[in-house]
Amino acid sequence: MRSSPSPSASADWFAARGPVLSVKNGPYPHSVQIADAFLSPDAPQAPAPQGLTHVQLLLKVTGLPGRPLKAPHPKPYWVVQYDGCEAAQKANSQVGCGGMDSGSNYFTTEEMRAQDFSAGVYMGFGDLEADTPYWIRAWQLVPEKAEMTRAQLCEVLPSEAQSNCIPLGTVRPDDSETPTAG
Image (cartoon, rainbow, N blue to C red; front, side, top):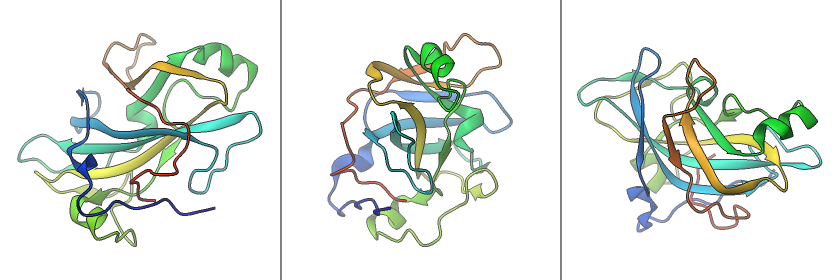
């Protein structure tokens, strides 16, 4: 698999874009903001099967002020909701509508700017420092022809109704110019 391009030190994507998703479910509340969204059949260690592709997100994650947190694994905390997800899941069991499939390690802004992706903090087990923004690349399988114009990043909630969501915004057709680690 090809490696993802890395950002230059002057890239403006460090500011992220759009609204902030406040995730309150679970023992470690945190905020998530989308920096980039794109479609690609290639994700680290997970090429998409025929007929499917990945919607991949570069996310800025921060904990509550003054509090460290366990690095959230994407699957139990976030999900991309899009029109037709349930029908796509019935047609292909590899399509998930209840949580993202996986993600990269977490990286600090300094690691991203230095293009140092050798370590990072492992998702789901590592600890994220207080008052430090971290970046993670997370992905979810979707049909190649999925309608993403109204797609949203949502907090995974115990009930089926997803009400804590933010729009993905523009979803690029490929990762040819994405500033992601991974």
